[in-house]
Image (cartoon, rainbow, N blue to C red; front, side):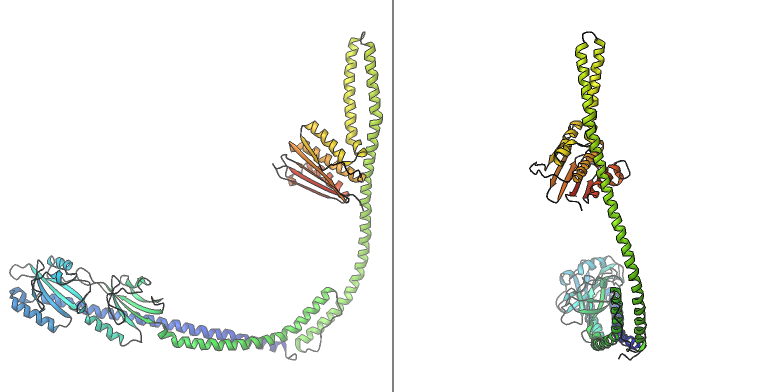
Length: 607
């Protein structure tokens, strides 16, 4: 397979990959065919429901016409009871939908009936349900008006009752009401006729405005029961609704339904029915679903084969490329001895040859770069040594500065201070000898004594600031304690020093003690100037390897970023530089209104 052209492999791979979309296209096409067929079915059911609605409309319109013609018969104007009764019986027998005809006076009492069951003499609404309302309307109506009741389930099945007035020939006014009882068997025959043309399990339902099934071809559905799917598809009962819909019925089955709204009948518009034709979807889609399942299975098989073959072809393409990537990775790691096989053939073989030549050039160029890097490394090492020397020199300068301060402090203390004390004593002796004769001079001498006291205090303060003797004599912890006490007396701020136990007589290196003391001194100076604190807590801890000082105040805090742009930054920078010269760590945290926390740590042995 290695001898095959890369172009041929990619072409074959593309053709195989195309099989999968083709199989999917076939499945989608079948699915769309199923949808199209369901649309046709919905349109057919809609058309059938509309035709049935028109046929029933004609049937009912003819019955209304029959009622008007009967009411206008001359036999009622002559008002011969026997003749009228015979006439009504003959009409009821000749017209099959007209099941029974009754003639009632304006009070509702039946005068003449086509029935032989002795209905004459009874009130009409006691014999026929739903008659009273339309009877009362008919008594007040004009000739030719017909009122219609909702369907009722009587002894002979579903029926309607029509009410229309008839007039007295002599007085030209309503003499009574003609009640026509209509059997809905004709409506049943209409929907049965259409049912015979449909596929199996297709049923038609005539549903009234209350959702009750009046007539149906579904023998398992009792009449005058509610249509079970109206709550799911309320559109079927909307006025003048014609259409089709697919849904899951009350039996959890997918069905298609076509529906059509019939026009309302009667002067009272009391009849409002819907025609609904329902058929299961699977009756239509089952062959297509079977075809789709077959296509899906075939598509999966062919797709599996296509993926397998495509994988093998892709592997034949990617394997040499992966070797090329591995070579590039080895070169990146600095291993320039790896090479690709050049006997692969085709475009990949040419690529292998070119990459091998490139690797040769990279190896040569890398050797030159390594030589130059060695020279640069040597220069960097020399510069690092110079930087270390400079750092040690800076450290030495700081040490010399401290030595100089110690010397100046000692001179101030042992020289100037002692001299000023002697002068103070001589002036006091002078004052005692000559006070009796030199009163005004005594006042001046007293002032001089006061000034000398102040000078002595200032010299001592300056001496302590330059180099506290307690730091040299006793060490870091006592010096910080003494510094804190003086700070507290001077500023009336409570300073709490902790961690100083005095049990470890071991002294720290002079550089460490000096730097840590100066940092605490600088921190207390910042608190005095800026913090407005009431309490300061200082904690000193040390072990065999390092010393740590933590200082915290409850002052007003500050913004670190803003402080770097003000005079506070000088003090912070001095503290940081001092601890960094000792190769220690420096940490400070502060929030406005929440005080400041400072931690410095220095090693006890310097490299």
